[in-house]
View (tube, rainbow over the protein chains, first blue to last red):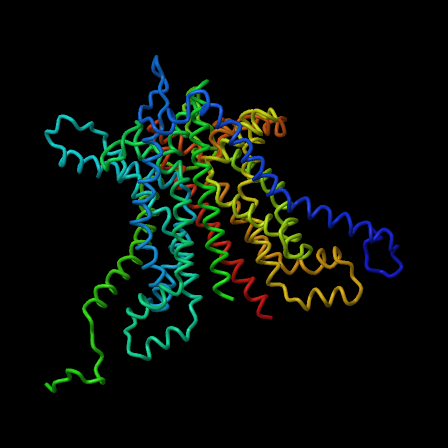
Length: 311
Length: 292
């Protein structure tokens, strides 16, 4: 590669050629992600839509009867969709307040030494594989839930006992799993609040807590909303952690019911599904994909708005 | 007692403030206690299962052994192949975005798709990988299918980390090199990339962590094989099914083999701890070199 050197004797022609090649290669690399997203979108639609026309859109999306393997199969995924929405909503309701409070702790409340313990702990929580969360949910939460279930539904004849694999267990696992995302992003946005806003509030006599909740948190609103949206994305897309914890039958998402999420339906049934059943599982994938795309678009909108406000 | 009521010299303690302080401390404690609880619980339950035989043998009814050697090898295969593809592409993409592209529609499109890739749940990557790499390209359930699927998944991670690293290289380095007559590609190769190296390596290590922990995207792409590659067939193993540690953990868990599951969980947590420690170390080194 003699000609690649910056020696002025090196031929200008070769140099120019290697420049153009390098430039071209980088463009190709950059377009890889565009290509990937396009092909994923196309494949999800190609594989997910046939069932919609064969079974009927209304039949799939708005029927609550899921019995894909019975003699007269029925493919209603309404309960599955509802479970994902309600499960995610409750995970957010639990996870976001704890996450934002922890972020406040890290930015404004904690003495340096305590922050030095909490911050790495949060980072490590983010690194723990989702199957490990699933294992712990299965071994710790489910037995607890089973005891609770036995106590609450003692003597009830209508309740189907689940052995503790229910919506609450799944929601708790999801709430824990979104914590690191919510904490990190809220923390970053709280830190970005200009110091003078804080000083002004303190100077007019507001207490530290008042300053945090009436000045700093409103000022970092767009960051915290971003955190929530990313948390929603993480929770609605999580599969392995909750696939065993949430139970194995499709039911209306009541706290003590065994439920199936969009993700867990795919994980637990794809292994043996065939023909139409398999196609409907791809439709479930398509529904999930639609949710994620909506979340992504909302996210870019928020980020853009945040940028404009910063200017 | 002097009556301080109404005096501005005394801080007026509000009860609501105290309650909120307590809530804040509880919230922060939750993360720490959770982590400590998870690590202790898994180690106590799993450390008994982890021994030399567990790490170096393959589960076999015939020999009466239970072990995860095959899964460890599969994990290494998948890490290697995935990084081999994703690292150059990710770095190339970052270089284009940072050094060549002019801000505009094109850059926004590339950045939007990178964000989108980062936001797609791994189970959907799994579905896509299964039908595209597995069926359309005909690789079936194999380590190659799994690796290609994961490539798409970790690409944003590497691109973004490289971009961040490139941004921290001072402008003067670029103009200095270009000013004495270096061509752009030569400047990138000899000045930018070496300066950004710690940041790029951090991205790669984070990607390894992601691959090790991934299961949903691999279950239907790389499958669940747990045998060691036969001697002399190191290469053809790539076209065979191979479950990683995380996938095996899930399978053991769903079969109710909790002892093996906790053993694998212990191994996974140790890997996660090591990776976390390494990124910390690198980031610190990175910060120092920036201060110079």
